[in-house]
Image 1 (cartoon, rainbow, N blue to C red):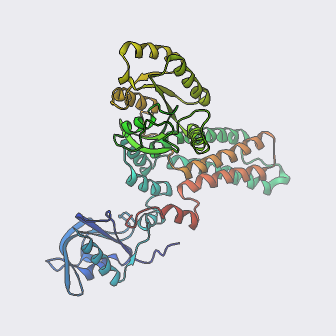
Image 2 (cartoon, rainbow, N blue to C red):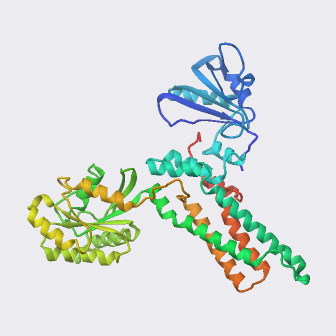
Image 3 (cartoon, helix red, strand yellow):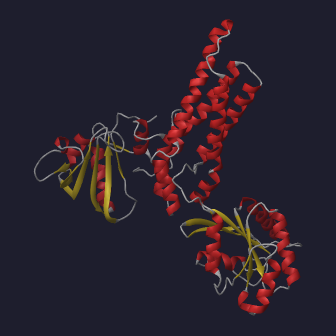
Length: 463
């Protein structure tokens, strides 16, 4: 566990040179340490200033003026960390930033560890653990959807619901355990009908949250879209067109792509992760077959499948190629058949082939090389991503939360089964407490040092 008695300092803005940088100082000695390096024209010390004030002055070290800067004063507990905090806004020179941090360290501060400011905010009760994790998600948000989900969680999201459910579980577990002390008197302190109803309600609530993970994970990491099809159908050209860059090697030689190539792009405010796969065909060599096997693995992970088809093939070949892919996904995933290379055929021939394929699968006519039909494809992808209109509802995007909720559901199911089978109070209480423990791990009501270190080690130093 970190030492909350120390005062920590770090650069809070991104590495490199910029117009302005911020150096953050937090801890019991933040103001006295800042007074040793910061001097205002009036001569007033920062430790004498009111909270929420900003002061112009000079930062000096060993008699040398490092920079003219602004110092913002925050006092405990009304600060990000819940401690006395000073934020020095200086010019963005890397030399200036490093000199200011060194000056603070020489005056008694310690260099902050990754995520230590946010960890202190958690330990000082400013945020719960789920909210602390949302800070990292907010910093990493690259789309409107990611930003909204992170903000929703930062504001409390489903944390309040989790806390309330956990308290109810702990109450009934305590009542069941108390009954054991009165076993000889046949006293019932926990109404079994109420307990059964509560367990069912909580199972419903946790199921709703775990089911939202598919959406939350797609928002956070990108909706996985696999581009599959036969060799030379233009899959790599399609990937390049979607990404608007030459990401994949393109060749007229069949079997050029031997391994999956992935990259992300935002379309209509939604992050998509496109995956170009090796062409699927029979009679491939050993190395190419390894690539085809990986194509099948990626199909299992896909949320949407784009079936690339060479429009210059005859109708029978097109039908056969499309059916082979559709049988592989067996209706489990939405798919779009793409009649590619439309620039090589006349409109009547394209329309005829599209009409033949349309009964099998939604079909679009495109030319990845000429980049025609791409707008319609992108519009269809955004529609198929099917993100909920209201992202302000509880959406789980964190794998740790999903695993905790899943474990809680399993324990709740065992408790409900035990209740219906009239198992002993101690066994039911054990399962209920286990469910409560899993729920508590989400908000940090129960968290050990290893969990905290694992969460905050991925934060930047100044956060």
